[in-house]
Image (cartoon, rainbow, N blue to C red; front, side, top):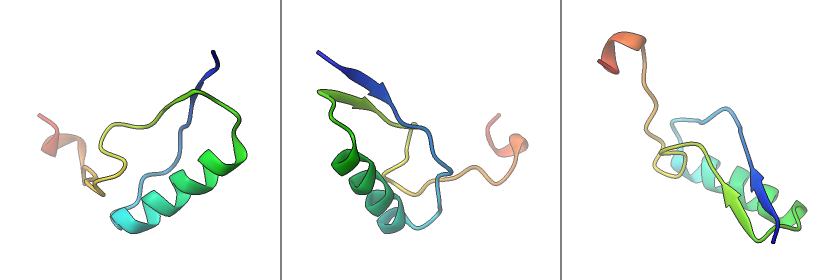
Length: 52
């Protein structure tokens, strides 16, 4: 079993994120791929203050 982590610059446009993820999935020969949290939702923190 092959597990991969895929890190990328998450965009506010969730459709662009899904396109980036699909391109990565097509290139990788893996069973499980770990993506950044909330990457398919387009939710991006504007600043560190909004996290806390």
